[in-house]
Length: 236
Image 1: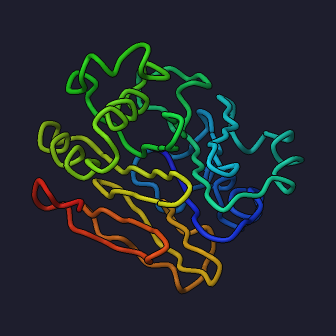
Image 2: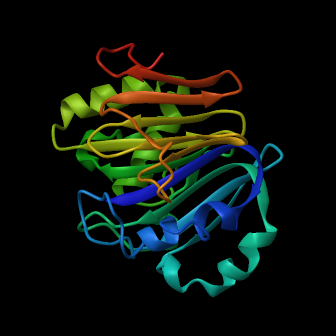
């Protein structure tokens, strides 16, 4: 239902990750190549990045392809850690700035590609704790409440409770980049200056690798680790 991208590595411009690649998020907002659900991602976008240890965000409810202000500034904004997304809203969910990923708890930036039954999410995550009433925002609040180290277990439990759920998560805290695959695509590009995780390749580089479904991915200074989400402790 969305496309997202994460970066951990050397400082690079936001433009080089989001706007400049030939099949980057700007193009994926109107012509994704691997999207299984929906035809385009015109219901908003967001780019989050770390300024030191502080997460910053630029979000909009408009399509990314028309954002001339962001286009003019993105080449001047640099970060070593980025989470960005373009949105295709779940049917019935609001189209508003607060519903656009990435969401934050002040330490992590988090994007959700998929959908989940809101009735299965705890009531404590709704309202003040969630940035929006949309399913992704409530899911993000639930994950933040349970803790990022429990991300794999949270996804396994929700996936078991909602067989129709798609739970691809992408999150970063400035030193770690983590993701799950549960019902949708995710790819890895290991560059000399860092690592990209993305819903689909932003170019035709042959070094892109597909992540198998139902896996947890962690990128850190120690490298890239993939773990199957096949039992309650599958994420660690």
